[in-house]
Length: 242
Picture 1 (tube, rainbow, N blue to C red):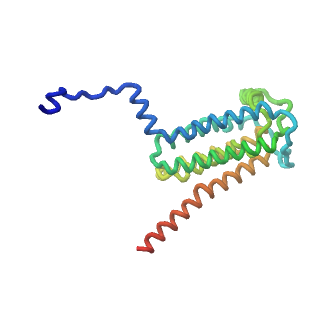
Picture 2 (spheres, rainbow, N blue to C red):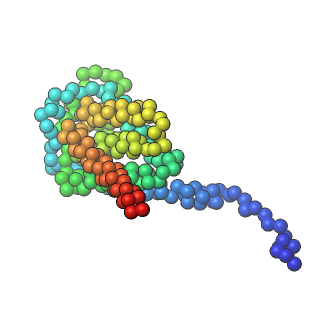
Picture 3 (cartoon, helix red, strand yellow):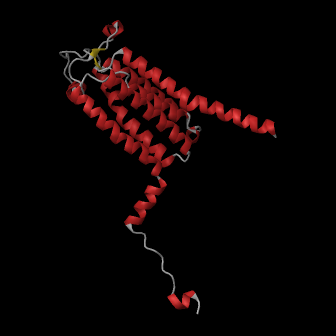
C-alpha cells in the first residue's frame, strides 16, 4: 500500500497568521538589529535627558551670535523624523542589497553610540534659545512646543546632523536608486535644510554641527570608502593571480 492510499491525500497547511508572522520575521530579521539598538538608544538618551540638567559644559562659539533665529526652519527640522523613518523602511523592506543595509546601520549605530559616550563623559548643553519671540505664528508655536519637549542639553555632536548625513550617504551609494538621480538631489536639498535648521532654530551650536559633520565624514571613510577600496584590491589580486 503506497503512502497516498495509507494516509490519504495530503492537504495544504493553511496560511494562518502565526505562519505569516514567522515568515515575515525570517525574511526581514536583519531589521531587528535597528529595533533592538533603538530600544537601547532611547533608554540611554532618556536617562541623559532626565539627569543632565545642571553642571554641564556650555557649548558656544562666536559665530553662533551672528546666526539669526528663524522659526520657519521648524519645517525641515521636523521632516527629519519621517525622513529617517522612510530611509530605514526602504533599506529594510525594499532594498535587496543587504550589504548596503548593514553598512548604513553600522554607520548609524556607531555614530549614535559615540554621541551617547560623549554625552555621558562630557555633559554639555547650550544657552542659545531666545527668551522671547518677536512674532506669533504657527511656526513659532511649533518651536515653543519643541523647546518644551526637548532640553537644551546633550547636543554634542549633533545627532540631527549626523543621522541626516548618514542617511544621505546610504541613499547616494544605493545601487537600486542609481537610475533615479532626482531622489539623491532631493535628499541632498532636504539634508542641507535640516543641517541649517539646527542652527537657525537655536537647537545647536555651530560646534555641534561641525563635529556631527566630521563624525559623518569619518563614518563614510570607515564604512564605505575603505571597504570599497579593499574589495577592489581583492578583485584585482584575484584576476592577477589567474
